[in-house]
Image (cartoon, rainbow, N blue to C red; front, side):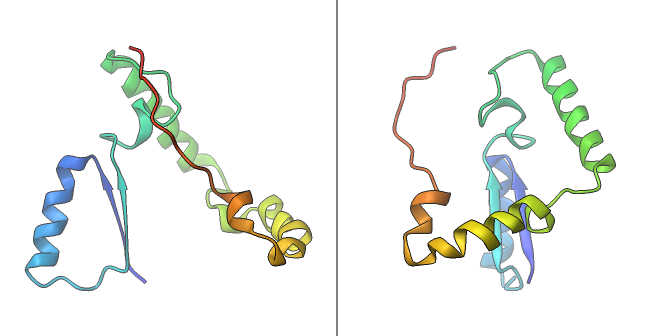
Length: 109
């Protein structure tokens, strides 16, 4: 399975052009709408200071390079949760347990 990860909405056009001209090997596309990922969004304190954004990005890349466990499906705690709790709850709606919903809120800058 081939997955494409795109950072920033401006980069989506390039992949769409590839798909329009025949590329068909991608099974899943993840678009991180924030440029560079969610360094300045998705729960982070909003800032216009690019030096802070560079520090955040550097820290995330360093963690990604040094941590032994970087994917949820290999996390023993996550696997234990599925095996001991969610497997029991399969008759119920795990969607409600594992997903969230969003509502429009005013953004203050």
